[in-house]
Length: 233
Ligand SMILES: *Cc1c(COP(=O)(O)O)cnc(C)c1O
Image (cartoon, rainbow, N blue to C red; front, side, top):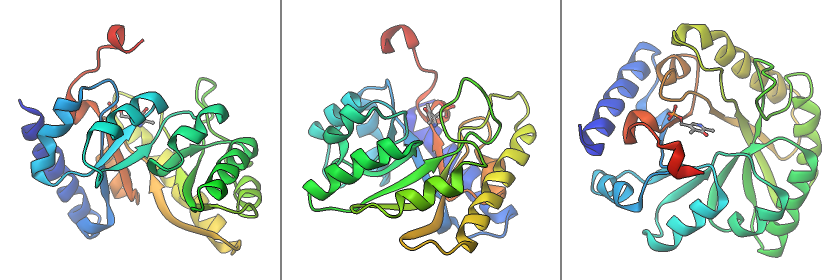
């Protein structure tokens, strides 16, 4: 199957999941995760109107941004080091992976320098997996509250990377818990915080995530095929 055929198949599943959940298709942004994949594959999707792409490495995001149309929305979905914030601050439309106040402070500093307000999500390690980045469910509200006091940065919601599972149903409770957490945080009415974005769901489980309220799903393999990690590293 071609990249376009894959994309259409995923799009259809997104539409069906929205229908099952009684949600409008417009509530869900399908992010095509293009990490490790060449510019040519991204270009194949542009005629379909696809403009939301996800990358997990700063250098790869900026290299692709430089050569591709400027109306593409680049989502920074990977772990971000503070010393690299300056390279993505005016390139990414949304940073999904803020997991410390120190990182948020750096984003704030660079955003102020560029006279912009950077929308971010706080990454939550809902399942408590040791191998994953992200703050715990318990730590999340105070981190959100503290980030919200900084200039040049706005918390728009939460993100999680669910565990790898054979059966996507196993992750339903993870998605449900992230949604619950966002409702809890919204009820605290922190200034400068909206909880409109829930970035959750990947190739294996995005349909369940949509049923549980995802506003952004991040699909790589399902659109671009398997990644070759020998080339990546
Ligand atoms: C790679 C990646 C994805 C996409 O994963 P697939 O299983 O290939 O869909 C989604 N989110 C993050 C944070 C990623 O790093």
